[in-house]
Length: 381
Image 1 (tube, rainbow, N blue to C red):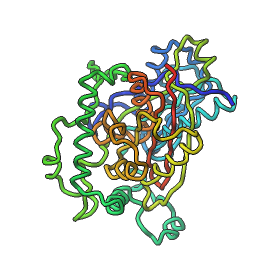
Image 2 (tube, rainbow, N blue to C red):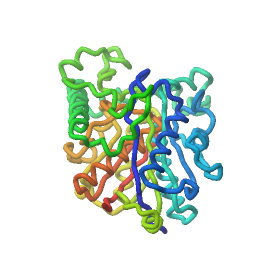
Image 3 (cartoon, rainbow, N blue to C red):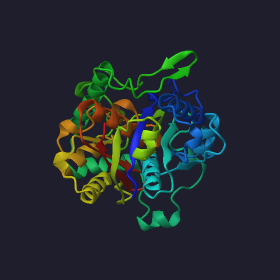
């Protein structure tokens, strides 16, 4: 199999719901990142074999193959194809897997793995309101129980004995780490500024400085009257886009690029669709087994903060060092633009690895319907 490397990684700052990016069509937002990819790498887009874009809510403004129309909106040659992938919150992490598999197999030499979501323009439940998702037989298989991520998060908190105070403490740390990363300039190189009415938007919009257990304690539970989940310990509804350039070492060298990291191993698993957010636990187990790399050798973990119980349950099960988990903050502070989050997390992680000389990084993402992706990458530069 061909070796696969990530030769470029970039993202927009994440806009909060109905915030700065809300007025930009998701195709245009993705196109801005594709344009920046060409400007920053100097590649000829005509040489890109495919563009695979994750997008979770393919409805309304996101209904017509966002991947293909983003290529056209960016002014790339019509000969460059584009596709759109939906694996819920892990859509763009799956886009990376698709890109890597194509390059590994020799069916492509250069693929863009990307993601976009405008949750301001296309609300998460828009498709549900227009029809009957899941179908009768899938619902009947699970006794008509609700496929709800919020309910799942409450069940996880109960099963792993996670108190509201623990969840709120984790959430406050997420905001503090994200704020510290912004202040240190940790995101500067990776962010693609987006022109909004003549002003460059380049700082993640959802960070709440000074968040504390005391301030979060004032928020009311959302999913159960006596529950522990609320807006402050859940991921933020966001808008954003991100892209990775996936290729071979030889093709990267020919293009004058120094790759960030090698795509080492990927895994995807299915899990209980009712308790749907536990998938990162078996996905991590599988990717470690496939790779042969022990947990002790991994220097950074990105486990998506869909809800605070997800990474905390993952920590309890894996025994990973909490100091190495989401060191720059996560979706609770930085936002979770569903289809873009997988590539956005990977962008943060590979830049962090390069800045700190970290050899191995592992990313895992819980996903609606009870699936999860895990990806292990190895530093090259």
